[in-house]
Length: 146
Image 1 (cartoon, rainbow, N blue to C red):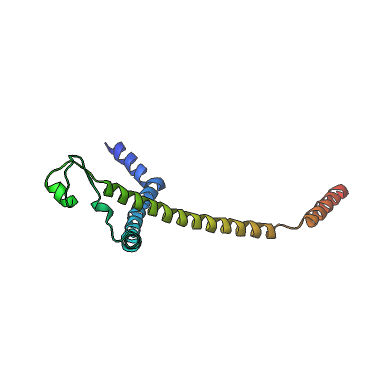
Image 2: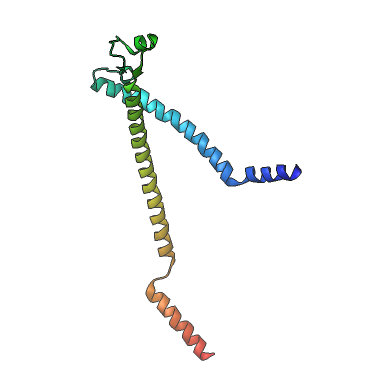
């Protein structure tokens, strides 16, 4: 039993598990930001472009009857296909994918700039080719004299 607890503690204390937990927490917090961007910025614009049509209220009754609203159809326990929920989820997905694309693109450029800067710094630290060649010739001459 003691061995099991020590193995569990070793598993938990590894960086991968801690990193995964931090990633999940960050993802949850980021999800709240994205949800706010979608609901508070993009959906009003989409509503304005579509004359305030709410996607959530789009439905198809399967029994052939006409219902004035989705709530009325649900109250009547009618078999319905809620197309609006799918369209809304699809719009949300596309917006999230677009936002994540731009974030990842920016991060990739930032990482690329950082690696270019490090490469330039390492190039500057190295002596020029002619200096290297002269140093090698000097070392060979010193070795021949000894």
